[in-house]
Length: 238
Image (tube, rainbow, N blue to C red):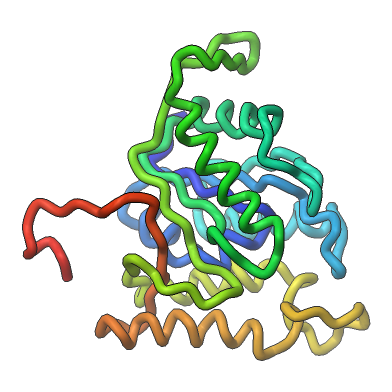
């Protein structure tokens, strides 16, 4: 299956938090979007591999994803090396996306920066014909996405562009809320973490509203780029 957008996240819920509205909007516009989670989030303070898997499946249904896969890398300990790059390359060549979304280039959780660089490097390497990969016994064709964009996570990073998600903020919030074990829950007896506070979940809304305010819409999500964005005309810029 060829996808228009393939989004990568170090953990289940990264993508929903950083780009859930953008993904929901693209799907509503008829684009095919898939998600690849690099790890199962097994080191998370709350929940288990099993609950995270169920929550990720629920979030995928809410967003309307075409596919969602998990590469099962070691949470907290995966590295940007040949072994891991080849696994990501297999996914890129399998789904041949035009656009790749990946973690913030720098963030509080060490996996976010690592995952960002790993996916970005794999996007380049995937276009090299002399790197051979096989999937289901078949040699894969080379493929390099046209664009790699990084969503914004814990840290406040100045975006290079924003996407108006005003009509899709509700879907984004529902996809985030699918991770019931991970975020604010007044009935939970599990240990508190920086992301289980009500202020954190409120900040997801605040950030989208603030980015929207700055560009004259209700809600927006921000992204950073690896190369200059090109437009045909000044009138293409809103």
